[in-house]
Image (tube, rainbow, N blue to C red; front, side):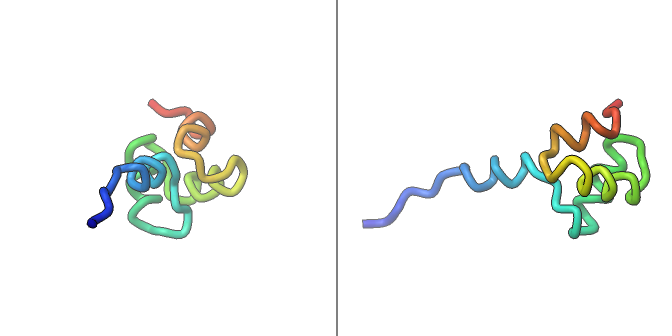
Amino acid sequence: MATTQTTRGRSQDRAKVAGGQDHEVKYEAGKTGTSKAEVKSAVKSVGNSRKKVEDKLGKK
């Protein structure tokens, strides 16, 4: 019997910013109108929650 795949993993992954992955940092920098260094700094200070990072950066 095959197991059913869910989207849970994808949802959890989208809720986080991987500060060590350049493409995610670049995407978040473009989305918030900030630099990649500012995104990395925000991830270090508030954690990798996308909502917290965007709040810290003042999402536009």
